Length: 138
Image (cartoon, rainbow, N blue to C red; front, side, top):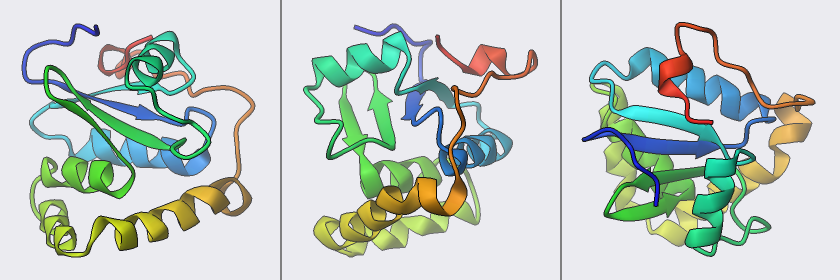
């Protein structure tokens, strides 16, 4: 499917969403163990993963966490699993797993549905700086 370096996880994000791009920058800054790689949902890799896992992009269109040889998680579960790997204090977000997914995802979907209105949208996917290019798959 998608070959990633050992022990890496791939975050698929909406490449034209300002909130999503800011979130990616935040993860990069706090990913001290260098666990995450990134690709826009709109990229060839993003499209292949969406197709392979039969994701309905009308229902899930903002963040996916691909864990090679394991799973693909979405929405609030993806966000919380990402936060768990970012160290203290972000890893404290795991307490939100006690909230049932249907409640977490209702909040997540509300924010996702309004993200362009609240945070804006770019005309094209973000282009990583040369220093960050190794963290992005195309």
